[in-house]
Amino acid sequence: MKAWRAMLLGAALVTVTAAGAEAPGIVVQDAALRAQPSTGAETVARLDRGDAVALGQRAGGWIAVRTRVGAQRAGWMRVWHVRRQHAADTEEGNPLLAGLKRFSRAVTGLFERGGGEPDTGNGQTVATFGVRGLDGGDIASAAPNAEGLERLAAARASPTDAKSYAHAEHLQRRAATVPGAGVSGAENWSGW
Amino acid sequence: MRGRLPLLTVFFALALAATGGALAGGLDDIQALTGDMDRLRQASGQMPLAEEREIGRGMAERLMGASPPVHDARVQRYVNRVGLWVAEGSQRPHLAWTFGVLDTPAVNAFAAPGGYVFITRGLFLLLNDEGELAVVLGHEIAHVTARHHLQALAQDARVGITADLVGNAIHGHLDHGQLEQMWRAGARLYAIGLKRRDEFDADRIGVALAARAGYDPWTFMDTLTTLEAVHPDAPAMALQSKTHPSPEERRARLLGQLDQDFGKGEPGARPETRFDEMRDRLSARGR
Image (cartoon, rainbow over all chains, first blue to last red; front, side, top):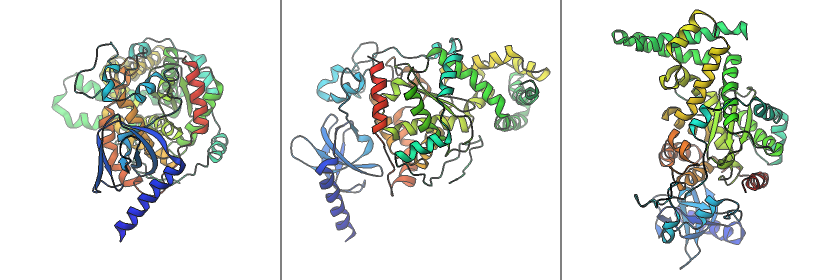
């Protein structure tokens, strides 16, 4: 009975999300599409990295997924097996995300190391981000910039600011245990 | 400042006791050394806030020197509001928390003692929503609340806080030149990175702080997926890759906590509207 209810709920979620709350996404790791948000659930299909999908509602670490090519299938995947795509992920707006948009085994040649040579290592093709970074030497040898820090100090928020901002976004404080951090005085504690 | 320096001296006296023992080949009394290290850790927790803040200020100014904050007051106010809302759920809600977006395409985030937290434009542009931003800021907030940098400064010989410097601290007060050495060592710490354990701890605390602030802690899985998609040797990613465990390892370590604490119930928020506006503003700067 429970299983049936769960299945109905799952089907309902996929239907609801299909009605409008879906977002385009892409599979970033070969993985199973499961009938329910559970590792023990039946495998509906096996999806490959690069497959285009529609992403729906989340349930914990699971997300409702519908395939966008071939036979239409719906089910659940772990959230890190897929990635959402944004309209803003254009070559101009964000070269890395544009690269992800084309993420596919068919275009592995597009993804190269920073130095330019193709990544032929373990087959885990990853996107290149070809701009120069900020390396440790830059920071270690940097002259202090007091003016920069003063500008940020001027942008500091008051607790009232932060609260009114959060309320405008309907953010609600909730209980969550903060784990300890070893020796440093952040032992288990719980406020709120 | 002068009146507070003796307490800082106590901190370094303990540091000397710990490092000096090791330098002198003090294998004869490992137990005592361990005891010193424990006291040292406690000392880092008891350092007066003014000293902690002073060390952090100098470190933050050097970060700003390498990469100035983005010239966009609206973006900086935004990240300060989100950041403070998250930090107020931490163990040290009343620090003078200062957040900022640094104007570099590098993909990274930094913290400095006393309540300084920075995210780069490059990392901000990779995030999908405010929930992801909240966890990234929460991770850095955790480094501050757990005093990870102070511990590394006192314990990690690679940053170059020498026994000489510590010795000087014991025999007098840290003068400006010595404070300057501390700041430089702090800046070197950004190139070396913190302990792997500290990074895993910061992940665990970061997701919990974001959840407390009402965000969906699972968003961090999206962030890790994105980081994984960038080649670790890519120039914009190299420092982040060098100083952090791999995204895959971080995900594996977090999964149990996320499934247990946040596997069921209300998922939490992932606000997008204002986040998207800021992302657009930052994206326009990079063209």
